[in-house]
Image 1 (cartoon, rainbow, N blue to C red):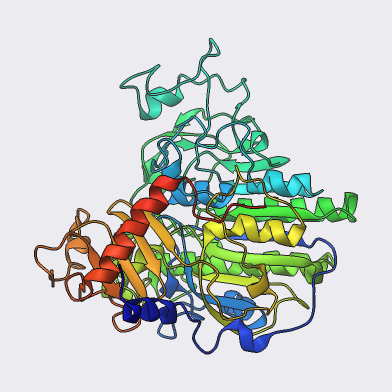
Image 2 (tube, one colour; image 1 turned 30 degrees about the vertical axis):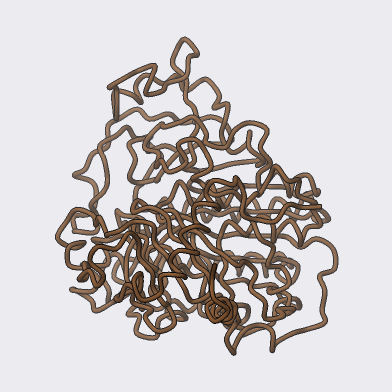
Length: 522
């Protein structure tokens, strides 16, 4: 049993520090259902934005303005440290490790969709509340392509067939049966996986590829620099330009917004804009080449900022900016070789001030920017220290839209609507927060963070080896860090605080096995 001293310490560690939204409380309540735009960047680090990192070498004026005019979360997290699991959790309000194969990252024409048919999703929840729902950009939670006989192309049906050979099996005249439009979105324009990385270089429109790939990707036509790595061999459509992908996504989102306001102005909309940027390869559009002093990857981050600015400008031009909740975040921390090279070549640290990078369980792998903007409802300039996870977006938007979530949906999603609206009472939104990584699970409780693995496995490559730190508790069975005193996660307190380590270890096991972490709803 925990001592009273430890219990008091744990409870005190959950308190919200000064500077939370509590002191900025307003009486304003939302009138009706707002439009919602959720913008998800890819592999964008906490330290990549000037509003989070004053030492950043990359100008991000539009995102800085969005934060200054809205709410900036300082302790927000992706539910996983890689892309597919995070997107799965965001779209379902359920941790990826609860899904069969939920830690998998899809490549090329990988499938089937990890969101099973019949599960309530974030877009379906909003569609049930009268929203028109649209997805633009990277899907990456799996979808099924069929061969000429109509059979699904899977690893089991075509063992050992990968890459170009696998794509050549596809009958592109057949519809995709388990893509975005079958999981709650009214429309979709985007790619199956990472747009410029994963072998199928073609755009999907709703449930088909209208312009199928006809040629093999020609690497000689792509920019040559270190940040151009991670671009696999594959098949490419003639309208697919690796450098212009995010600008194509921008135009499609703008077209959706304009068409919706023109034809359905009285109906709310939900736009999920999932960028390619800044996943490697760093191929910014031609217009952004050399726009920063931080190389191709810096230019790519600058393009992210431009896109956010253009979407905000479009909302204002259409007269709906004041009626729209805009949220911006990233699916995980920055890529490891990118961080290594950006530190060395440009003195820019995308993980600043945290330890770790994408795939890793350290804070830098999953602590992400999260900015929310809603004029008249979210107080300008607030910096919240509430611990928030992107898995919480579904319950929060459900509360804002007036949806009642059933108990068999959004099992790990906590509602932080009151924080957004300046009603933070100082109590933590969630007592425990979990993250999935390729190094196992971690769990947060106030200032305490526990890692289930006894040592860091690390990733391959010279850049990752340079991040390794000494083991300060040899023989430990887990790792415990005090993030207030040791934000760099340098000193393992597993032996110094055994009761806290034991409590968090048991909570992690219980959380993982229980099937849910959010309270059962009435």
